[in-house]
Length: 246
Image (cartoon, rainbow, N blue to C red; front, side, top):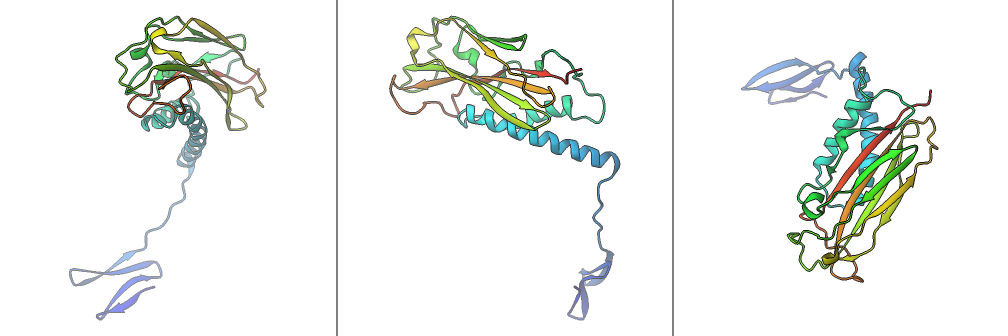
């Protein structure tokens, strides 16, 4: 509501705004709020759907990474989801009965300060074949002693598989595994995991995300990790997409 102050009208009156600038009274049109239409409305809807998907997946990755992750990760994953699945036209991944690996995510660091390759000589290998996810941890006899973790004498690795259902818009952990603590001097033995992927998604359109991380400990029975924002080697090893069933 407009009011008179020092003989001059100030504030909104109808569709006009009265104000004083350098001693002169100025009348301007009240700015209108424009509702998005056409392509803008579609883009806003796609962005909202992508944001919801990204937030659900990111929450589980953040939990797996012990909260020690690069916050830029959310923007990176958001950009990839948007480009692949939430464009008005020109979607890059076609519908498919078989699993398709999204190369953008291969060995994508969740925390870039220390990488898995800085610690292990042989990196894990992952692949999906006939609805089974295969994870191979190669033998690593030597663990890089350059790791700047004070009082870290034990190490273990963790694996987490996350599944996202496009129709239900739900992200959930479908598999989790810890190797058990080993003395850093002894390294890791070779190990193969087979993770059965149950196709119970409502329309068959789904993602599987495999995360891998190294955890450091003071002793074999100590409580709590020694990981920190500075040292938390955690990566997304791979992401696979499966389209609608024909």
